[in-house]
Length: 239
Image 1 (cartoon, rainbow, N blue to C red):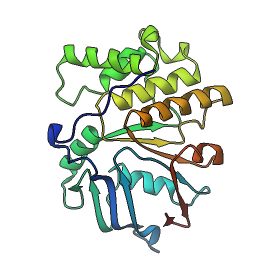
Image 2: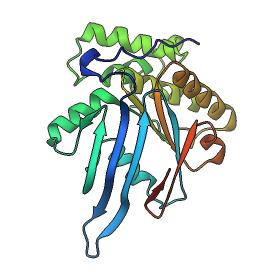
Image 3: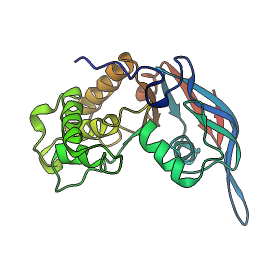
């Protein structure tokens, strides 16, 4: 399966090639108490365009906190987070939300597909609030399904798809906005070994096409798919 190369640098304000997609500069997150909980200790991390990084750690280690910060779902309480060279630290919530929608594609363990909507509709709805014209949304949704090998399943609802197919639809939904970063949280956690291997193969192909992929996992086999592995333990990032 062949994937289109990512957008050229500077398109829609993208930085030059080589600019880090993720750059943590002393980023940390403390939840207020009492007592305060330092869920993510101040840390540094750079993820460059086109890298495939895996994040590993035991349950309760801080992986979810890292995901929320990297995905612009939570704001750090210390340090600076640059996404595609844009300092997100001082952005108001509305601009952070818009930046997240343009630059990050999410893939979750539980798929999060609407059960009574077709595969095509689930992907199309992901562009509903991006200002993309309806006709273009349909074209791009079909292209995304073709990219993940499910063009023939466009009309199927999630209940008629296998677990692996549902995760491929979720990946297509993440790709349709043409993000800079594909952020995956335990993407094979609900899959059997055959479907997990298929989804990991797809992530390998996306990485091969130039996509920046970051996978959070507790599975050592999944972790080995990354070109680089970062460990979190007790809220401390070890690169």
